[in-house]
Length: 177
Image (cartoon, rainbow, N blue to C red; front, top):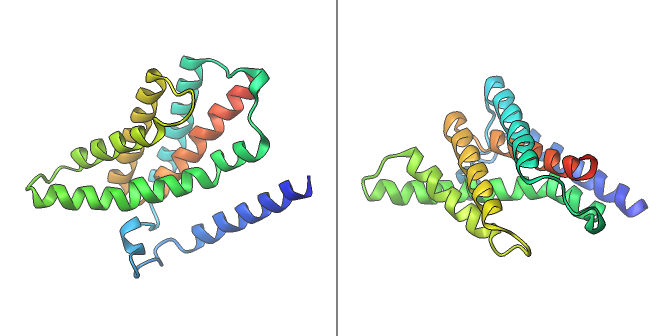
């Protein structure tokens, strides 16, 4: 049990550190993750969109098999560090890479970038054991949502907030529904 508390403390410390360095990661390649402050409107919209998408997905797919409940550490990682890492990779670096490649091809559409990254996001989750086609479609949809939040705000912070709340809602629904 003390390992759980140590893990929680470490994760909360890392999240606090990441929050405090918004706008300060401007060199050594970190500038491409766009970890910059976002407006209060963007943050509120991200929180509402992430929670709303989580409620919709939990309702569509129902509860999880209670006999196969995930371990606390798996849930904690899925709600905290997983969304942070995934969004820095997908809506940070890959968003920049794909947007740059599309710009070289004279395609200047943020929507095309968001779509391409959402496809990669869904494909990255396709190898997960037991994943179904409807779940992949939902993952693609949330990838589009996170991409839209990234486009709207110019920051990866709102997609991280939305992703954290989405995962928290679907795991809470799995436990309580």
